[in-house]
Length: 110
Image 1: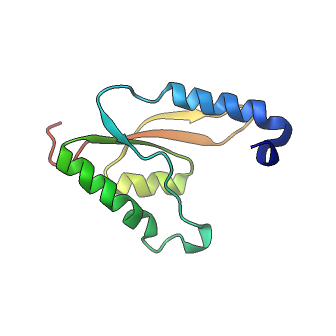
Image 2 (image 1 turned 180 degrees about the horizontal axis):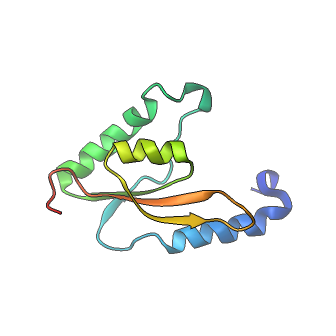
């Protein structure tokens, strides 16, 4: 991490801790911690295919899913799969927005 963040490692760690502190503890849910596709391969449905098995499993179990979107493009992808923004977190020093997103299982009562 030092190689990536250098002198900004402390800021990066505080930002990550801020995001983690907002992770819901209840109700039980699947957490899609990292979903990513190489930029050159985006727009081909790979992100959807990566998420399909876990979202199908969550739906079958009647369990919600949670993730944090780190770009407007990924937020739109997740919204297409039933996730809704719960909160926008603005990172310090003009850092990017992070969107906390929740998805109730399909077929669940709202």
